[in-house]
Image (cartoon, rainbow, N blue to C red):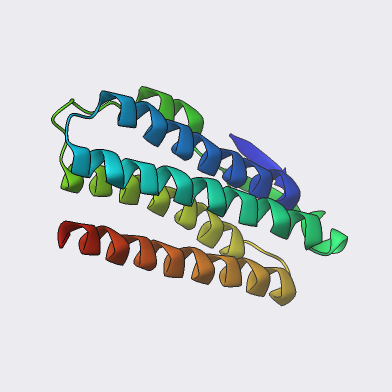
Length: 151
């Protein structure tokens, strides 16, 4: 997928977060373990919240930032990746966390790559702030997942 404006890219990342939420819902119906189901439900809700936060950011961001043009920002078909991801019914908490981190890191890397290719320090700074927030949310999610193991 090729992006031309920052608005498109951020909208796509929000859509990808919604797709991740739907993926976790699909995996939830396939899972055997109640612990895995609890984790998937948590991940599903978390991705929905992250997508909504990003959509709010898009609504509130300055127009001149969102209208920034990019020349060579391309990204894989993430939605297809979510649709094709399958795990067995006996999936473990580690399987879920590993799959989630792989998907999450792909989106964070896209934002980092875009920040590196930004023409102004204002836009680069805004994207780096988004990356920082994404990484903090990722750390919290991992910590919460580990705490679930302690239950």
